[in-house]
Structures are given as structure tokens and as C-alpha cells.
Image 1: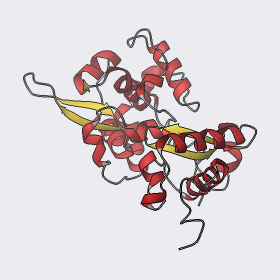
Image 2: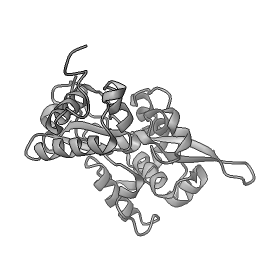
Image 3: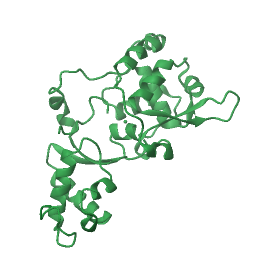
Image 4: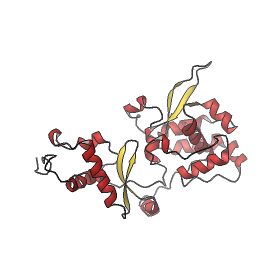
Length: 253
């Protein structure tokens, strides 16, 4: 084992710890929690949480004028390209950004603000029937999951957001969602969506969009990437838990 990897916590300078964490975060393709960061050290040399926090703060301060920023999301910390530079980075990939319909994004926002919520309650708020394809797309995308059943006749499924949703929207918790005075005010809902997702633009023809809930979501379902099973901790934290294509890009490894 190298001397650097075997270095004791007491002899390691804060600046060196910050450089180690920066290298680990740069190489990772997902956010890293305190536990994951501590695991890269030998047990006897693992830094404390307070030492990790101080080193992460140092990285954040050092990158204030950089195109790369350190952000904390629900699953931990990650280094990513700042949003203002994302359009240039996105050109490295040929695939066009995934665009979602107003119906799907409205459904996602309603779930965010009113979870746990049933499909029938979503339909009551939107005033139109909800396509099963929209719910399936949100489930496959990893932004929504089933939390259980409401104990009423029929026992409808309760829906809530996931940790993946928070990670992809650069949120640490649901407390960071934009304030929304009235969930039934669709104009306010659209404004909240725009703050969450800069790519969201309500279509001019609302009626056409509502009529096309099923057809639009069919294409979304086909295009939505398949994801692995949810993290085990998802089952313990309803609503604690996925990136629109135009959100800040993670560093390629």
C-alpha cells in the first residue's frame, strides 16, 4: 500500500484531504455520501465527518470561480459542470435531450408537492384523466415510486418522489422545492416547474396537450431510460429520493 493511502488522519493536512476527496469525486459517476467517502480510507485512517465537511467546504471555496462546482444532493456530494456551461458539454453527445410533455411534468410537480398522493387525486387537481403511460414513465425514470396504499375502498396506490429525483434536480431535500401557494393554480404550477426545470415551456395549445396525454406519454415511455432497482434506503424514506437532460452535467469519467 502506498504511503499516501496509509497516511494517518492525524498527519494528513486539510488541504491534502481536500485533494483526495476531489480526486475521488471526480472519478465517481454518482454522488458520494459521508460513508462512501470514509470507505476509501483505511479504517484507522478514515477522517471524521467534521473533517470531511471541512475538506468539502475547502473544495467548494476553491472552485467558486471554476466551471466545475461541488454540490450536495440527497445522496451525497458530486462534482459537476456549472449549469451555464452545460450547453457546450452536451454537444459531446449526439443524443438529443429528452423532452417531456406538460402533462408529465405537471403530474411530477403535483406528486412533489402533494405526496403521498393517489392517481385519482392527481386527476382531480389537473381536471383531466391521467394516462397510465405517464405514471409508468415516471416510475421507469426513477423519479417516482409507489409508497403503499391509501386505506380507503379500492386501496389506491400512493405515489411519492424518490432520492433519484432529488439528485437529478440538484435538491438535497424536498424542503428546497420552490414555494407554491396553491397547487390547483396551474399558472403557479408552471412557474414552479420552470424553476425546477429550465427546459419546461407550457405549450400554447393546452387542450391539445390534455387530449394527447396518452399518445405523448407513450413516446416518453419508450424514450425514458430503464433504471436499476431503487436503492434499499428508498423503502425507508418516502419522498426522500432522480437528471433532466439540460441540468448541470456530471463530469465524464
